[in-house]
Image (cartoon, rainbow, N blue to C red; front, side, top):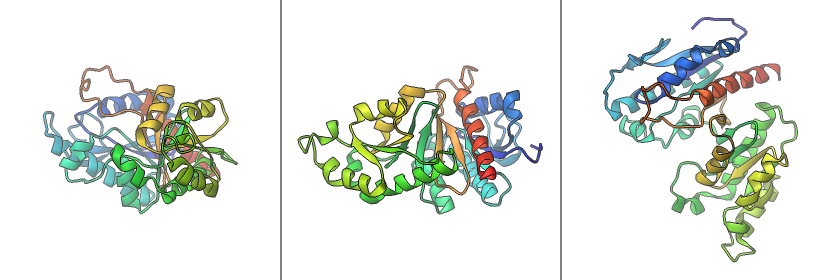
Length: 300
């Protein structure tokens, strides 16, 4: 899609074509306020009921999960190529189905891990809204695997990527970042587990973080303005907090990439796809935030 050369040019991937991706992208394209702030280059399969700018294969309604997964993975890979070549300034991704992605030949738990490998970057997954920012120290893994994956290096990497992202992408000059505890009451001095005392507390000191603080208070403190972001030890404790606080307006941001990438805070919603009831608010917010980050980087 052509447009003003000064506006951010964003690659928009269709995601799983069986889901609500095409509907929310169409709503974004029809939003006059959004058209004023960026140009969208739609990357996806022909037949996805959208004006596709960069065609990745074909899609026909009723296609298999594997075909949908291959289509969504191919679109992500192509969008990354465009961004690395400087042909677009950032990427906005519509939701994918993780099982379909694997069935389509892409062995990644999700966008975050795929983008990290394609760009050779150390990244962190953030969900951000105007009320709260949450970053994950571990992402899409089983709960039983969290104690093994939650290492000092994982915490310190999340802290550094978060600090850099808040400064460079969000304009926070001196980020205040809290670490959420792993165990109830931060272990209560070892009564409910000693990881918070033996692992998280030393890692927090080394990385310049506040905490660890219990999960049942740290997110409230951040919402009240005490912290600019909270690093959560595992997926659901962090994602539950941000989605309860801001579902529908939160945006998924992959920190640490050489370009901004955002996405909505929801999944493919296969059960309502095609019914015309999908809410595009989070996708529009994601597109607007990606454009804002591009502009902030240009001004730096």
